[in-house]
Structure formats: C-alpha cells, structure tokens
Length: 117
Image (cartoon, rainbow, N blue to C red; front, side):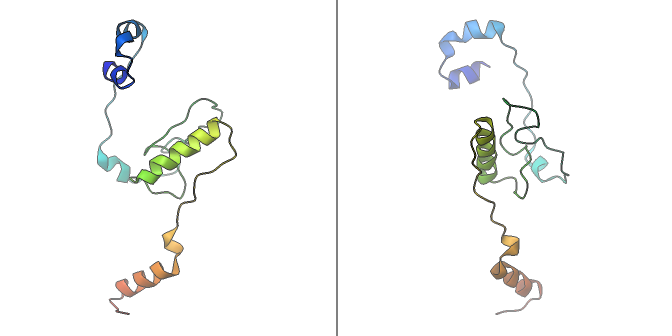
C-alpha cells in the first residue's frame, strides 16, 4: 500500500491512510495462465450484470472474439468498462477477424499443402 500511495503522489498522507485502510496482497498469475484452456464464464464480464460501479480491466476479464496477451485486449477492456460505467453509447473498435480474410485463408491453404503461388 505504501508503494501505491507513492505512485499516487500522496505519500505525505500515508500515515493517516494506512491506519484505516485494508490492503490484501495477492500474487500475480503466471504468464502461462493466459494460455490455459478456458470456457465462457471462467473470467468475469468487464462490467458484471447488476453492477454500476465496478469494472474488470486487463487480461483476466471476458471479451468475446478477442485474443488475450495483446495490448489491444487491455485497452479494449478498459474502453468497455469506462463506456458502460459512464453510460456512453459507444463501443471500442471491432476486433479484426483475420480468420475470415480471403488473402489469409489462401496463404494458409498454400502453406498447409506446401504449395507455392
């Protein structure tokens, strides 16, 4: 908690804040945890149903059609949370679905069959 207060530039008030705060340290998940098999529901929604003041952001929340371990995933989850909590009628940019791009499909076909164009 003192480290967080330092980052927020309020270390001067740390003594007062630390007497009343509750800080529960937790371990950061291993990097491989992002690549474990998962199913829908394993991760919380960015803004869980029924909540008006909580949003999960980063790699460990659910974003359909997206791929974890990218900066875009973290940014997109933050955008979804902010837009929802502020009641804005906005959506982040759509995820580019390369798996439907004919050029990508053609190159994949040629590679899989060891053909050269």
